[in-house]
Image 1 (cartoon, one colour):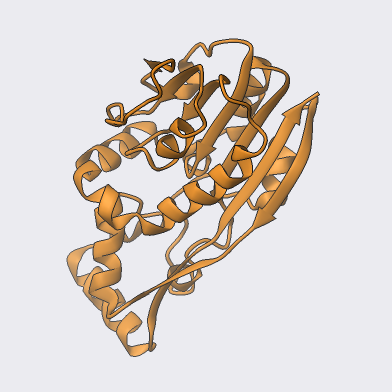
Image 2 (image 1 turned 60 degrees about the horizontal axis):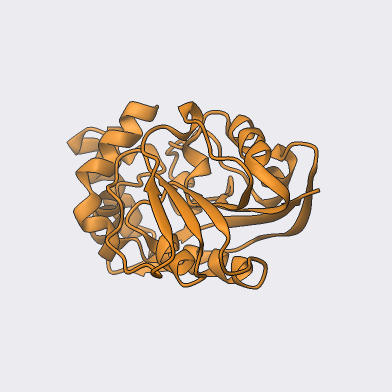
Length: 242
């Protein structure tokens, strides 16, 4: 699973920034939950920074130090406050040693790709100082219902709604807020929808594994069904270490 994810995202890094409008909204909303709860000078770790949707928001919080992790993406080119120490932490987060005594660990739109998100969250919790914040977004099991209704199986192994994210948290973390959301996107036709998925590298359902004739038949069925929509179902969980 990890090599497939790395290949998919690496291939579409150039188009992701413009195409991933839902992920940009999700990062902004997660940052809004963080902003009032983290003081300037905080020590932060972001897991799965990608092209920097959430990273840009964290930079505005004037961190003292921030570690940025991603499987394939280079560090986003951002203007940081003069005092902020920025450190790359590339690779599979499950295999990395996290810094200790962190004030914040944040991750937007990444956890659904992990086979065992609970193990990573336990590791993250140990890296937080008492009072430190864990801020997460993922996607619920109802993600992309339009495509699921056409019989495509989920491609990400760990879809979690807000309740599922909370259930994955280890002991010692107190949930502050948890909620689910829907972000519907409209497209002129099925080809535009599939182009969107391809441009983000986030084909959460396995249309990418269909043959050309199968994909053509699927798009014809989608066009006959009426308005072409794709609904993201993000989930959010904010918790504090006791």
